[in-house]
Amino acid sequence: MTTILENGVPPADRVIELENVRVAFGGPKNRVTALAETSLRIARGEFVALVGPSGCGKSTILKLVAGTLDATEGHVFVAGRGIGGSPVRIGMAFQNPTLLPWLNIRDNVMLPLKIVPPFRGGFAAKRRIEYSDRVEALLGRVGLSGFGDKFPWQLSGGMQQRASLCRALIHDPTLLLLDEPFGALDQFTREELWEIMQTLWIDRRPTVLLVTHDLKEAAYLASRICVMQARPGRIIKDDAVPFARPRTIGTAYEPDFVSLTQRLRECIVAARSGQAVLP
Amino acid sequence: MTPLLRRRLLSLACILGFFIAWEVLCLVFHVSSIVLPRPSQALVTVWTRFPAIWPHALQTIYTTLLGLGLGIVVGFLLGMLIGSSRLAYDTAYPMLVGFSSIPKVAVVPIFVMWFGAGTVPAVLTAMIMCIFPIVVNVATGLAATEPELRDFMKTLQASELEILWNIGLPRTMPYFFASLKVAATLAFVGSVTSETVASNRGIGNLMMIASSSFDVPLVFAGLFILAALGIGLYVVFSLIEARVTGWAVRRDEFGAD
Image (cartoon, rainbow over all chains, first blue to last red; front, top):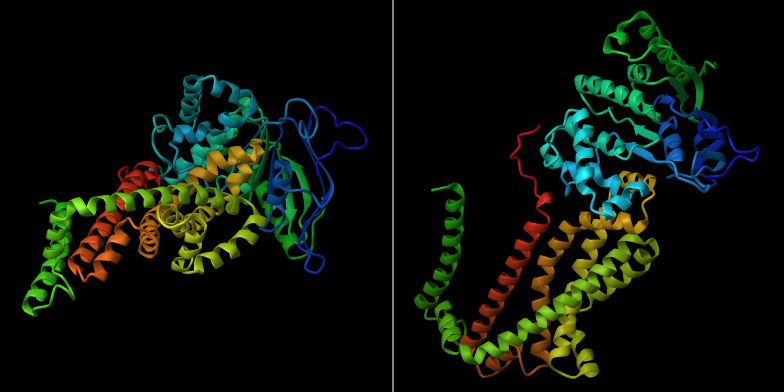
């Protein structure tokens, strides 16, 4: 359900607001609660990471925000959705690149421009060359210059994932939803993409919701980390990440950073063994 | 000699070998041409009686292509409906399976009753023969669309039509062409079956008449022509397929891991 909160329109800087949201699957007999009573507020330009063990409802929150899943109870508010005016522009990337095999990299990245309102008009008006330059520039930023004519199967997994990130960013989304986009990559590619991701975020300041099981990744990228617990899924810890930007891979080896990931880890382990550490 | 040429030559030699063995065995064992004509006899019959055979061949090509064309249109639309709607899947699928289990030979008299003997029943029989594989494959292709891609398109506020056009249809193409190659050969089966039962034109009718006068070389000439037509249509679809869905056949020319 997507509605405006009853107690008035949320403050202008709130992009996402989940209020007492609950999600359950299945019939009355075999009911599985994917997400217990959960509230979450995300302000414009925040970079929020959701971490936790598998099955804790991380992706469920992402789907609620994306609008591809309806809450069983409670309110999901996403700025611009459900009310008049310009709808929120969402970019999305997944663990698998999910590029279309029949399109080359350029056309794959261009796909959102074909569909999202302010750009699709231009697409009809044959501004393809301008869009093509735009795609090329973005491909250059992730280190894929000159690969626009290649097909997805001609690229390595890491390169496909870079292209998939470009596809999520090409239409200048104000809200970026990332579902473990770096999960299947090797250590070095992952760290490289973290840096690229951070730079892009500092430049454009979209609101980002990142689902990950990598604590280092969360601490490196996010400005806020929500730790989740499984069965039933809920947020048990919600902390700001204080480190100055831009962060580097070196930051990840500083004592404060290490102790943060250590604390997050303990929190998740404790929650798994049944003794939840509440904030 | 390149490996490809070698492979081609080898397969050609084996195919020729089959016909030569047939020829030789018939000669050695003195098999009468009324029982089993030699391939050379059939080919000579095709050559000498070509003016008589040609109009029949044209008629069969005409009914088959028309039936196939209708079958493609109906099958594709039905497949899209079944692939994108749960209700359509639940209702149309069992009916389709039931319908395609009926021997088509049993349906021809009904068509003859409705439309009279000749072209129309042949076209319709060819059509119903090739609908089933097309429907099944198109529906399967649509169902194979990754749910993540659907979600991705939905977050871009894409309409169902845009999802179908940009994701569903291209994804379906390899399945569609695979079914076309089956459907093309089945269409011949359909039209010839109908011509055999009720028509005064077409290769099926020609073979029927030839067999009733024990002109067995002519029967085999008909078979050879049908086989050649079937191969021709198959090749045409293969060529179109290679152009349209080349992406589905991965080539390792880039050397990425």
